[in-house]
Amino acid sequence: MVPQTKEEKIKGLCDSWVNATQLPGGGFAIGAASEQHRLHRNGITFHELNYSEIQAACTGLSRVLLFKGLNTVIDLDHRLFWAWAGEMLLSPRSTFFSNTESELRQLFETCIRAALAGITRPPQSKEDWERQREISELVEFNTRQLVLNAHLVLAYLAFPLLEGLLKKLCCNYVDYSGNVINPFDVPTAGGGIRNYMPNDPRKGKCSSLRDLMFLLYQTVADQDLRPRIDEMRNIFNSLDNTIDPFEQLYSWRNQSLHGQTGFPTIGGTLVNLAVLIAFNQIRADYEHRRNDVWSNMQRDIETFKFTGHRSPWSYYPPF
Image 1 (cartoon, rainbow, N blue to C red):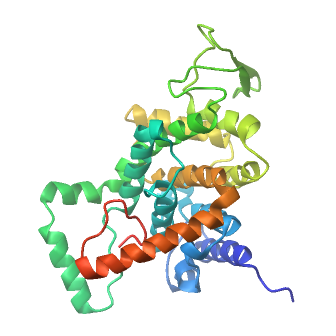
Image 2 (image 1 turned 180 degrees about the vertical axis):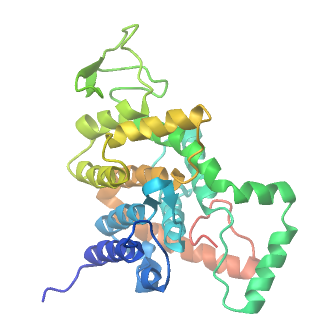
Image 3 (image 1 turned 135 degrees about the vertical axis):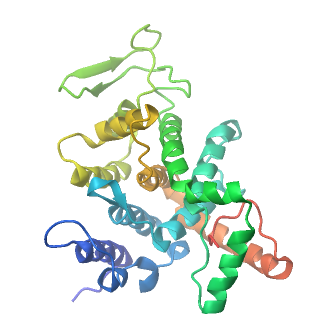
């Protein structure tokens, strides 16, 4: 029997978790049968994964994050993953964002902080639990309420984050203001073609999240990214196969902007999509960057042990 690769193990664990939660009459339930399949319980450590493995974790964790009815199940696995993504993409050692992209970088930082807000180390004893409760009660009231609603905040911020990231990657076709630089076309919902043209009063601007996703997927994405986006599209299709996944993103954004729904449950999925796209941009030297980040992090951890103060640019580990 051929030994299972770590990438296969990650995918298998996520599939097993989903299968273990399914109820015969529909719906899902979480318990011992499902929790035994969590990645962190099975020796998966994000800072040790190579590029293909971390991307498998991204799509796998998206599968176990979002269910029909927009129910979401956020676990320590997700927060460990988001913290590692923050460390790789946003720490002072990262060069993913240029000096002229400070606003987009700050938006990404805020999304990751919102995704991690309120996390605490799993208590090892009754004394640990009581200490964490005492610390929580010392937090200023409004701050505490904001943390409790952090994933609603994340859902609203993740849309402009994804839009900004798409414009960053598609910069040969559209700038950050949405102005079209070079012509491109995308399919319409009705099966036609929508053309974008520079300096055209009607076709010269693009700020549609749906159309930007099609631009990335059809024109800009390389042979590594496109099948990974297909995996995410399949996840969205599992929620509703009557609408194109990119159209679904567009629909979610419009409904949330017009106050029809806040969709606090989809923020994590949108962040995963953003991370998937961003990691693809550093894949050529992902392992080198990973080793450099981890080496610097170990020094930061040792400093924290002596001073008790954590760097404001630190993300991983999340507690």
